Amino acid sequence: MYPLAVDSDIHTRLTSQLTQRLTFRDRIWVPGGSGEKGDQDEAEKDRLRVRIVQQSHDSAATGHPGREGTLAIVARGFYWPGQSQLVRRFVANCDTCGRAHIWRQSKRGFLKPLPIPDRPRSHLSMDFITDLPPTGASKAKYLWVIVDRLTKAVTLEVMDTMEAEACAKRFLQCHYRFHGMPRSIVSDRGSNWLSRFWKRFCNLAGVTQKLSTAYHPQTDGGTERMNQEIEAYLRAYVSYVQDDWGELLPAAQLALNNRESATTKISPFFVEHGYHVDPIRISVEDSDEPPRDKEEGKADALLTRLQEVNEYMQAVMAAAQQQQEEAANAKRQAAERFEVGDKVWLSMANYRSPRPCKKLDWLHHKYTVTKVISSHVVELDVRGSIYRRFHVDLLRRAYQDPAPGQKVDDAQPPAIQDETGEDLWDVDEILCARWKKRGRGEYRQALVRWTGYADPTWEPVEWLQGTIAMKAFEDKYGPIKTNDGPREKYDALAGTREPRRHRPGRRGEGG
Image 1 (cartoon, rainbow, N blue to C red):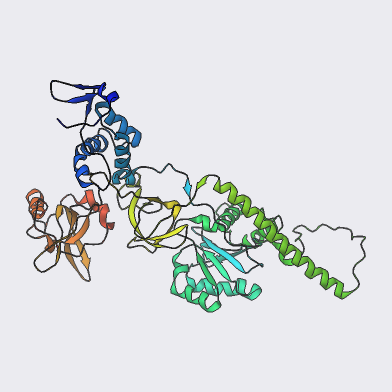
Image 2 (cartoon, rainbow, N blue to C red):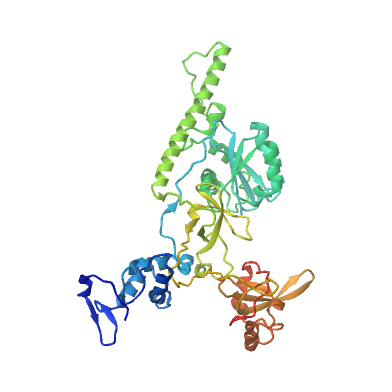
């Protein structure tokens, strides 16, 4: 029996059975430590309690329930002081729950509108509408949308390619010769905007690139909204075979620029020209107001009107942004503060799964924060991707205080070192094998599951010779040089992470 420090009220509810088990309200009292973090002796005493929680939570019969569900299962047969706190800590640090469960919280990070431009055509945003039917003699399939962020004026260009050099040449023709170079351009992280040519072009022209964070289209919400308006216009007027959308763009551009902006309440065409275009000419009687006779008065009136329109648009745009910000933030939480070294869960909703069915794949993967860009953007150690900067709305903090003895998937035990100081890694199992092209020849690879690591990797077969895992594979499927094993089962894992680049160890069950 374990000594128990309990008050007199609890003493009246405890019963000792003939089996030497101490019960509390017909539930087994589980002995343990005080539960204080950092106390190694007390943590060792809590391992029995953690085993009970782990079996109640991880079992296929219970299915990784949440905090309340796990607590209800544990509390059916067991009791100890601080039971709820231990269950909460265990569930928060469960890697399987972190990967598999849908996030129920509201969006993270309050809306941060882009700065309001100080004059028309000085700050642009641009995007492509793709996968359109071929149009015109060049069979172009891309529509380039350029939007002035202040006036909301749109420029539409038919493009047969999205390459940076072609975009630069067309930009000089459609924008530079009429309005000069802008001060900044907002765009997504397409390969054309990230190319060295486009970066050099913007640098020489004095244009600041403002790239959106990965998979966060809200950064350039104005252009996304304009794309919807353009697509709606084309749907209304395109032919049945849909190959004449390029011919409709002049009228579409005029129609969109002649509409009053929902933000500024004034049309982009009027801002730039001082009058509204009349698509259907209707004769209107001249005004009774006598025209100005002095040329100076006409010039003053024109400049004053343009200045008033510019100031009016900035004021209205600021008010609209404030209204949009308040409406969006009503359903958002403040951005969580991350620091370098923090572990976070990244939503994989925007990534293609290497496994056969994305619906059954992990929803989130764990990464480490390597750099804090701003209060809303951080950089992660994502390998094999050009996207390393993410908005905090795509992230959730991964807890790093597991309960004593709790098993976690990313424990990643340190490598063993041989007598020469080279790292060795435990092989848990060889899943299958394949031939891999290298130059004009091929070499043999095996898909290896490593002890303590969640993701398998493809490794050269030569590195695995003499391991217990190799012997187990060949006993079951035959020589690995000629037998792939259950290749079709794991074929989708060709996109797993890079090889460990260290030879495997030869100790333990895994070899």
